[in-house]
Image 1 (cartoon, rainbow, N blue to C red):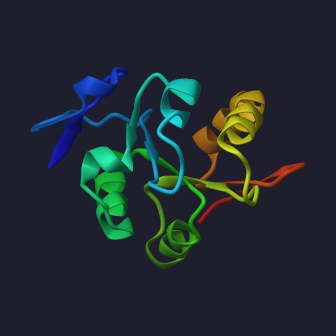
Image 2 (image 1 turned 90 degrees about the vertical axis):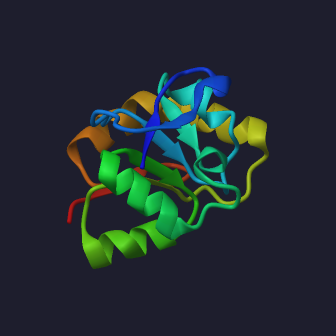
Length: 135
């Protein structure tokens, strides 16, 4: 199953077929929906994949479409170790922040994060630096 990608919340619809779209940001359910319009023109929040989508479902959709997953969850790192890319993963390791602070922090560093994820499989975001990794 594929997903039509749009930059408006009401336009996320299941569709088949959809051409490969590598610039889509798949936002894990543990991150706020507002990350999408703040960081990317093309995004899908996990809540649009399924009600309470599992990590396995998100991994499969992201892998099949070569999307980038952004998460606070270690499970996607573990999957990269087991299965390798795709997808590429942005792992937010900033601890507990208020939504406003999270959005502000990621917005300030987003260009640097984008450059890193385009060339590497994993970008880990720490409070004062980024770490990158390839598999």
